[in-house]
Image (cartoon, rainbow, N blue to C red; front, top):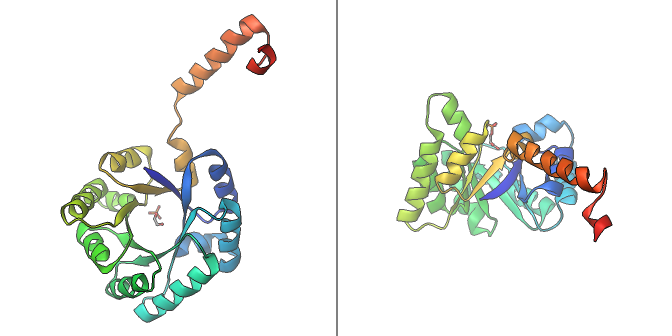
Length: 226
Ligand code: G3P
């Protein structure tokens, strides 16, 4: 499983990149707008924060394929290496996915809620496909089932496109997509942190420290003793 951060909040990105094995950052127009500052500054700050080697997936906004292509090129010029453009799987989006990927810009097809959308996006040239799990679950859909179907279809049709699962509200959903064979998941920072939280781990670690300090003294470290 490859973890991405689904946010444009640079402070949260800095904390998570320092602690966790994060492969990159994904944003969308809503996440950018939440920051309420210039797009170019946000992208530069994200790049400066995560370093030159991690991926940035940023999304086009226009509903028109030709303008999406222009937006993708402008975003690519701004972000540089490791850039992937997110394109929604509308009819114009499918046209844009073909055009943009033929220009050599990797495409992440986004706003996916059916396996057929993911299949067509992969055939059009998308290198990642992003199904929205929680948004489906919220309306009595089955986000995990859609992810499983996409994984199955990509395998059956021998497509190289990867599954970048998105839209999560709880750890169980992330566990379920991992079990379903998703290659990666993009998570809000608070959910990434929750993935490893467990009170038994915390109490286990407290027990190690108190047993140790009971013998070697408070604050004694391994480095003090050998
Ligand atoms: O980046 C798009 C996707 O992750 C949406 O998530 O939480 O707005 O449903 P959410």
